[in-house]
Amino acid sequence: MFDKYLILEDSLRATESGFAFDARLGYYRGIGLSMIEDLAVTLDGEAQPRESVLFEQNGKSWSLDAMEEAYDDRWEFGSIATISVTRAGGLGVGEHSLTLKEKLRISYLPFPLFAEDSKVITVA
Amino acid sequence: MFKRGVSLYSFQEELFLGQMTVEDVVAFAASIGANGIEILPEQNMPGFPNIDDATVNQWLAMMDRHGTTLTCYDMFLDTKRRKDRLMTDDEQVESIVRDLKLCNRLGIRNMRVLVFVRPDILERCVPYAEQYDVHMGVEVHAPWHLDHAWILRTIEVADRLGTKHLGILPDMGIFMKHYPPEFRDRFLRQGATPEIADFIIDQHEQKIMCEYTIFEVAVKMGGNKADIAMAETLRHAPYSNPKRIRDFIPYFRHIQAKFYGMADDCTDPTIAYDEVIPELVAGGWDGYLSSEYEGNRWVQDAGPVDSREQVRRQHEMFKALAARVAEPVL
Image: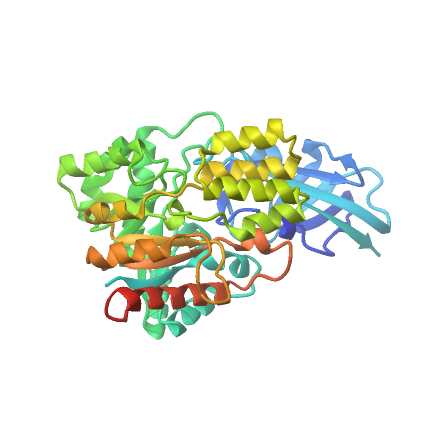
């Protein structure tokens, strides 16, 4: 429902340990972090390992496994969080293709809800 | 006569992107005479479920500023909150009671209950709904319909308990008389075959049961991915009999006025409001028709979304239909 808006344009950046970008939750309400089963990141066609991904908001961070047991913290509707990825070699300048696929456990749906966005972003 | 309102759900595009604040929506609703505001606390109240009195008071003051009133509270129930197990029955009741309390603090007397919530869980919540004076309305959402056996189970519980605090809350998507042009156009942009799209629309127009069409498209016609996805939308696109709604009036106090897009002349090409509204008026129903615009996700790939204009047109339609059947709606 909001797929094209998940990755914030121009937020992709190199970090000391790899790269990071800003993103929103692809759903029409906020949900507890425990219901976010996956934040799958693909950079330039290369799927990033699950254990290399960190979710960060309000000065706190969670691994994807830790997120699944975070029952009292929420990713609010429309709220912008940072997704950082540990990656040897970091992020070079130039054009990159970035995909984020969110897998959400929504109680009233019989299947997982996927929200996916891909953007081509130039890093200066 | 029915009253007019909006659900904040209608403005999800602008709210999500930070292009409008909740107060912008409330001010807009008031400007078109839609003075009933339906909220989704889990969308519109950051920090949920920990909402302090100051926040509650801010919401009530905002209603006062605009001459609006809170009409309905859309609850959710995270039965799958944990990955390792479902919520126990006690936990489900506790979650619903939590919502009833907040609903009461906000002065709201209608709660939209997700359709998947079990009737026996709701039965356990009835004493709390009575205590907090909140009507729990199970959302009758397509492909369910008013006479669906699952919905009738809730009605049966309400009748057996003799309670006025449990019933239903119809979503007008159950009266989809014509296939939404917004759906068709989106699938065409995604690569659907024009002839197959026409076929699907014709099948829907004839009210042919969806599984025939899906098989025809997927197997016999060799439809592509977009064709098949379009055919599969028929599973959730039923047209049920508007004449039945009068019989259910004792069980609902609020309506989610679902729509996917309004024509330039302020008519709805899809949902049979012209058939439903006369029934509501004839039945003397006086609750809120609460706009629920769900077109944004179908058009956002093609251009900017204008939820205000869509909602405005729907309210022009409500006024016109009300004027046609009875005295003008206030």
